[in-house]
Length: 123
Image (cartoon, rainbow, N blue to C red; front, side):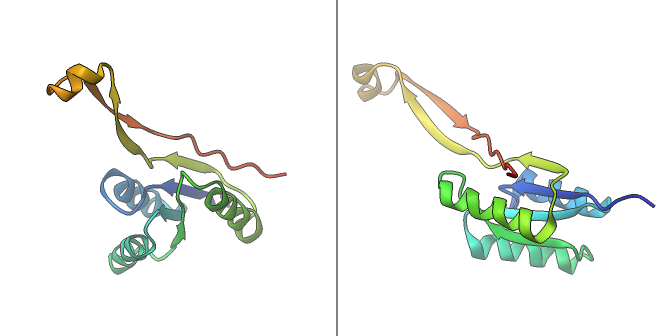
């Protein structure tokens, strides 16, 4: 008998993250869907549940907040005890201004998307 696998998907409430949650759960992985916005995350879990995927849990996570990351890590450690898969999908968008004068004239910037590495450690 195969051991149950557990996954955390950051930014799992929409788009690619939601589809990753769907695919993992469809393949028997128990998923913790995370989202910065609690109501959006809960709605995503409800949507997956309505399509017959019963074991997808929600946990709030803001990748910019160390206490939020610690809270998720503690939840995984105390409620599940292990983590087999981490899909780091949460991102933060921004601009890098290369030249302030040129930027003010309508150029001199690069659009970027920063994906922060979420590390969950068990001590």
